[in-house]
Length: 188
Ligand code: IMP
Ligand code: MG
Image (cartoon, rainbow, N blue to C red; front, side):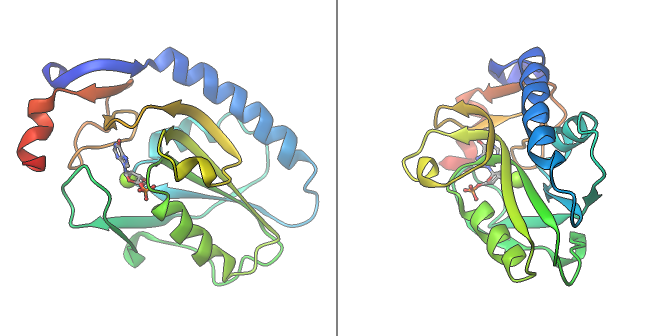
């Protein structure tokens, strides 16, 4: 696995430091929500490590509901159609009075966050905020109003810290790029 890494884009120390800052902001912003539940909605699977680290820095009473999104077909590095995977999703029927925070690993085309936001809006939440670990430098992503962005990165394919390539590399502690020959077969 290590030999597939081209370079470390964001180190585990930088990630930890930035998540602490974002957690402080989120805590301040949500501290005033005295009415209704605070409901975090992590998007599976890419956000799992980010969410695990983030929520332990949020001294807030909260619920966690999961949503799983699949992009089909499953194995390229380019954007695809996003669909909800119902079997891994446990959203309540209603989010009335809930202050929702959607959490994803990366904002790329924006399709995933758009889809999740529209699904959650049908459940009438009191408010919706969005949080991503990474935002790719693409023209459309900068037009999307994301409330919390940990890092802006170049438009490159990255893995690690929850992000995958064909479901591998999620366990790398740093956010890294891969050698072109690792990605090559797929994009040929
Ligand atoms: P979007 O719907 O195009 O914004 O893409 C978001 C989803 O695509 C993320 O939740 C990731 O699962 C996946 N994705 C986009 N870019 C990358 C990347 O550079 N590495 C790994 N996964 C990515
Ligand atoms: Mg993903």
